[in-house]
Image (cartoon, rainbow, N blue to C red; front, side, top):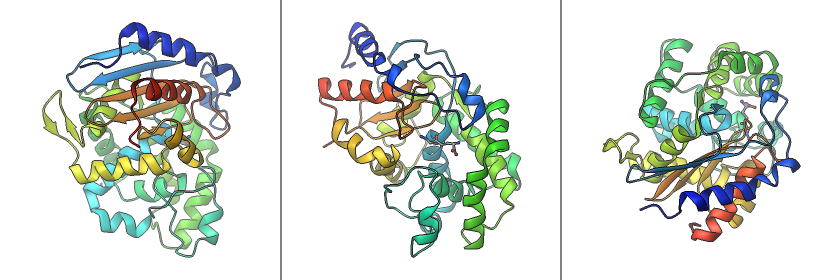
Length: 309
Ligand code: DON
C-alpha cells in the first residue's frame, strides 16, 4: 500500500532540489568530481513489490559508505557478533568519518563503530575468502542477492581513483595494524575496500536493498530471508546511531528513519515493514551527506509521520 503518489513524490523531489545549490560534490576522490551538483533522484520500493521514482533513476552511483552496512552484515554472517565486536566498537562519534584521532586517544584502541572509515576497514578485513578476489566476489554476490539481480558490479575507474589517493585510509590501516586490529597486508585490504566502496547500482536497486532491511532481512519480493533478523536489527541500529556520521543525532531528530549515506551522494533508507528508499544527490553538506537527500527525507518523514521516535 503505497503511502505516497507519484505526483507527490515528484513534488517533494522538486522542492528538495532547491537546496542542492548550497552543496558541494565530493572531490577528495578525484573520479567523484564528475557528479552533477543539481541531480536528485529518488526511488521508493514497497513491500508489495510496487515502486515509485522521481528524477533520473537509471543513473548509477557508487555506494561508498553505504557499502559499510552491507560489509557489516556479511562479516557478521561470516564470523558472528563476538568476533566482529572484538575488532570494532558500538559507539557513535562526534568526529568526521575519516578522522584518525580516536584510534590514538580511545582507551581500547578499537575503532569506535563500523560506519566510520577505520571501523569499516576493520570489518572488511573480516570478510572471508582465500584472497582479495574471492572476498570481493563473495561481497558482490551477497549484494546481488539483496538487490535481486545479477548485473551489479564495481566501477574500476572510481576504485582506482580512490586507491591512488587513499593516504588517510592507509594511515588508519597502519594504526590498526600496529594495534593488532588487522593483520593482513594493508595494500590488499585497501584494494578490497576501495572496490567495495566503488560497487555501483541505481536508485531502484538501493531502494530494494533498503526494503530488505526494512523487512528485517526478508526479501518480500522473492519471499526469502537473506539476512538473519538479528543481523538486520544490528545493522539498522548502527544506521540510526552512526549512519549519517557526526550528523546522526540531528538526522534522528529531523528525520528519524534508519539511513546510511555515502560521499557519492547516495542515501539508503529503511521504513520498517513498509518500504526501502534509494536516493542519489551528489551535492553534499559540510558533513559529507547528500544535502538534497536529507531535505527530501525530512519532508517525507514529516508529511507521512515516518519517524521511529
Ligand atoms: O573511504 C572513503 O573515504 C570513501 N570510500 C567512503 C566515505 C564515505 O562515503 C563517507 N560518506 N559520507
